[in-house]
Length: 423
Ligand code: NAD
Image (tube, rainbow, N blue to C red; front, side, top):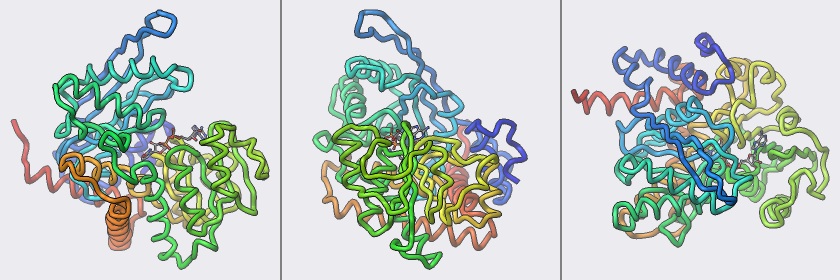
């Protein structure tokens, strides 16, 4: 069982390790390859001195972990959050390796983070943190080395600063060094919605597996940021009924369903608190809403929301993991026993990195695609990855999660064997 090796259930690195171990064992991965893939390739810690608005100097801590560049340059977001830890960044970097391999795009895995609370910092200070962090990473970044993207607490503007800082250092405009950029700076059409759209694409596939229709499905979405709000909006437009929504301020549950375009406007344009939305609904905590009646549960906020302590309370038929690591490895067995159809994070939220890959390709070609082309290609990548994961799960009699890890680890291991060990 995956939980055998977990000492601290809420340590995401241990959770990621437990799944990796289980999948590696099922694959019969040889010991040397196992060791190679278990450890990150590089870990960088940066102390970032910044002049604050009042002239004081503050020092922030940042990390960049390159887990693997076996299949291509490192790829992974930069997170700005007070909760960032090195263990978290390590786990997220490894997940990026498996995620890129599951959808078969030519990237390795990386992740970055800075311990700071962007909601309490001015744009000027955020820009200084971003530029110093980028400058310190220096040569470790690059379109052929390591390509960051946005994550929690960072956005298109942050990526524009990374691109500019890197470009100033190498004396040429280098758009392909980051993805998730503004359209005016080599961003891709469809990138902003891509992770949410990807969630919907794989959910549609799961519905076909389970012989359900969107109209039969009530959805609860925890997290109303880039992933959650676009997933909710697009799913609403496709006929799903969004009955629960939550963000960091709290949650609403309304059996009748929410008017998503109005809710989206309330939160994102009017910048009002989600729980105050006048569309009605019972107020509750962002945790409690996870256990309300629904067919589809979409955690799209933070890690460790479903644990061994609460997973038995999930009522959903489908768990669609928009967030990275919303379920602990100790909760996996409980969800399996309940017969929940899990679409694991490394597949469910891979739409973002897939369109990041398209962005990188477009930047390098200097030729940009129509949004319909981006969306069609995204659908192709995710539908075939979903089919492969479900087929592999059936063939090896493992959960979808372990199947996704097995597909990914096998791909990376094959590339590694072909390359051999440089010494
Ligand atoms: P975001 O910062 O845009 O939004 C996060 C949302 O979660 C916000 O609505 C926030 O209020 C809410 N939230 C934060 N803490 C919460 C809590 N404790 N309870 C309930 N809600 C809470 O971030 P995002 O880009 O949407 O990322 C969300 C998750 O999806 C993260 O796990 C991220 O790693 C993952 N992810 C993001 C992308 C992407 O393209 N943005 C791609 C893959 C995975």
